[in-house]
Image (cartoon, rainbow, N blue to C red):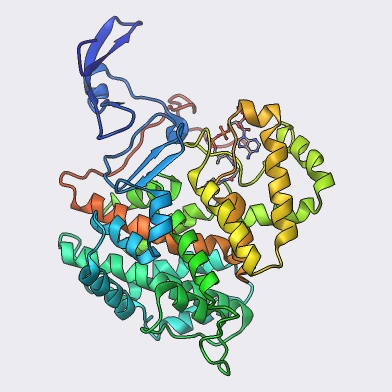
Amino acid sequence: MTQDTFTIRDNSTGKEADFPLRRGTIGTSVIDVSTLNKQMGLFTFDPGFVSTASCKSAITYIDGEKGVLLYRGYPIDQLAENCSFLEVAYLLMNGELGNKAEQAEFEHEIGQHAMLHEAMRSFIDGFHYDAHPMAMMVGIVGSLSAFYHSELNMDDPEHRRISAMRMLAKMPVIAAACHRHSIGYPFVYPRADLSYCENFLNMMFSLPSQKYIDKDNYISPVAVKALNLLFILHADHEQNASTSTVRLASSTGANPYACIAAGIGALWGPAHGGANEAVLSMLEEIGSVDRIPEYIAKAKDKNDPFRLMGFGHRVYKNFDPRATIIRKACYEVLEQIPGNDPLFDLALALEEYALKDAYFVEKKLYPNVDFYSGIIYKALNIPVDMFTVMFTIARTSGWVSHWLEMMAEPGQRIGRPRQVYTGKELRNFEPPKK
Ligand code: ACO
């Protein structure tokens, strides 16, 4: 191997070729195998993309061994401590934090784009009252392409920016509308005088007879602070399953609303964003500390499909820095909005038990971001089936940032993986026997 190249040798044919090693600013280098098939007549095989980088990106960096997560170079704990969600969204989308005027203009524009086309109300009304809100989200966000088809020249950077702003602005409005629909309450319009998180809480919980600020209730500073924090922690996570889905769909040149709808579908699964809902169900099922050993045994049993939800991560093998921040926030929130303490106590006991168990230690399974997020959402009165929708609102900032980055990159190619074919060899057609 010469410097900056990697030699691959096929022992069956003796054929060998050099491939460039590509280095990012920080992090693991990659072998550029894009000419592998041309040079050696081979493909790589990497189910689950365990060792494969699918793109270059300057947005988010993770060091899974050290528990590092950076957005545009800034450590997640510093952003969580000092920023609002929309400041982080600006950073993700634009690469730098906005100055006061830039941020104010960004937030004003988000306010302008928040309204939904009135005809969308009848579209939402078409869903059955007990539809899962994530099912509604996939459909409604996909339908945005039918309502907002102006500014869709994807070669025009301004059109792309407007589409991204629309999605970021409308996502909490759609999310709250899904909730109101499911409980049969009238929709609440977004208000330009409220911040992003205040607005969401108002659209979720206000009643026609209620003055909008009910400081002890749903728009308390505690609730707004907690929501900002959770949205920041969920905002982006480099090439996770849903972001990769958005990128893959976008590589075909598809409409951006359809691509984000595809991402929402991917996020819904319990191995990804659906985990926060699954953690709460699991904690409620376990019910008490004395049943923890029984569930830990189930999680370790290879014949039992049960997994400890909110535990383990493809990338983090030491700790998830987001889980550390959320665990701390749980103490603060529950001190001020009590009610969920038994669940939190149970979660703490479960974490302590699992982290002492040889199975979890050997496999490096630690609590991930979603082990504790549901406890905070529940304290804020967010219904359990809305937990993954909350994740969707936050992750929209990451999805649109990756989409903008990708669309601006010259020489984009359609994403098209290969396969190892394991089916029948060539055979001639014969009519099926009667
Ligand atoms: N409980 C019990 N065993 C587990 C768990 C768990 N939560 N997670 C992984 N393992 C075991 C696996 O059975 C496997 O064991 P093996 O080596 O004997 O086969 C080993 O640990 C490695 O697990 P993989 O599934 O190969 O790890 P992968 O990186 O593919 O999956 C994932 C990561 C999906 C997060 C997995 O840990 C999991 O299912 N966790 C529970 C769901 C969850 O919390 N998801 C949220 C992730 S964070 C997010 O998306 C925001």
